[in-house]
Image 1 (cartoon, helix red, strand yellow):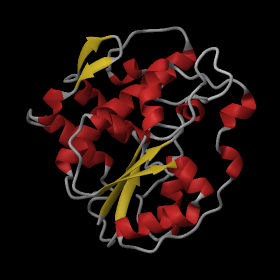
Image 2: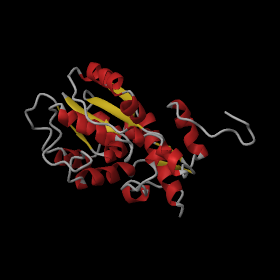
Image 3: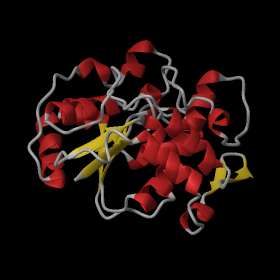
Length: 247
């Protein structure tokens, strides 16, 4: 069985990677502190190959439709196979990988590996975009978007793009969505869901409740209008309407 974790950087995917490693799942030959399979250069380049076929419609809208029907370029396949060279040939019964940039390559990853287990990791974007990540500037991966000097807005646009590319991709056969907040605050319940999905026993790692809703304590959580539909979908608290006494 092959497993991958998708979700924007700083969404808490390291918790799932560390859980899988603690459960005896082979996650690749070399991992960094975040549980990413490294080096990631071939994955990054694969993301740039895919981005050439994403049509920017202006504003914060992209058309991903070509990705679902066109032949996958051989260059992309070769880069992914090179990136996963320590995973795919490994003889472990259960194996997988994690690196946030998989999300940028997701439509073709699904087409290359339709039968693997996909774990989609979500986190309140106000916490997710509080720190810098390699995918903050989508232009570094060949994606067109409205340029801005506002760093937090740039990260929020990256969050939306990665949400959109996942939602635009036909759902694979084996798929589960997990909120980081549920993993932290309801770990046992969430792990039971994951165990049923994966068909394996999972180890328990230490989680810290103070990693949830950090934006409230820092006082700098910005809630962009274009993120609110996704936040509503995942049950995250939205700002009160202007002038309302309470929500």
